[in-house]
Length: 133
Image (cartoon, rainbow, N blue to C red; front, side, top):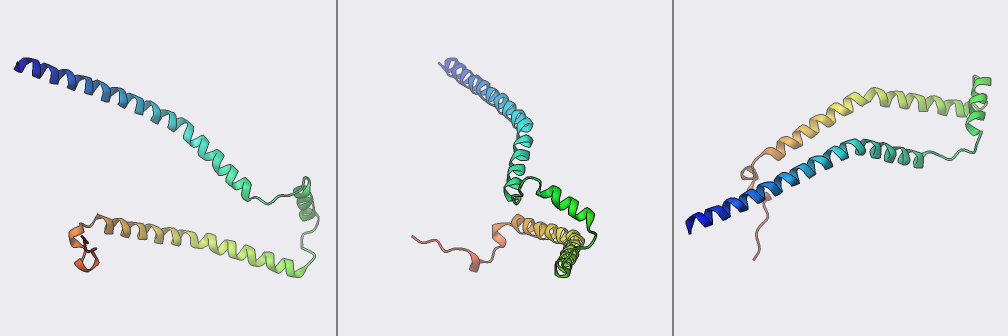
């Protein structure tokens, strides 16, 4: 009787291994498919989001703005000129501050990951929830 039991176990294990191998091949195929299609999908999604946030300009409006900028070197309104100047200064200062902000974000992320890596035993008992029931 023992040989039949071991043979049935081996047969079950073999069928389970074959099933796992087929599942693995299927997953590998899906991963390859996602790798080929996902960048295009993300690109299309990003473009649609950006298009949705873009203000509507009537046809020819952008051409009029370009031609007006080329013909007049200074805006007619001094208040508008001041606003444009302030906007350009803000944009340039934000661009200059970006590396510092990114470095601080990286530091914060590394600190959070470091805290996550600590064991639960290190957490003070005051901060643990009491089990009710």
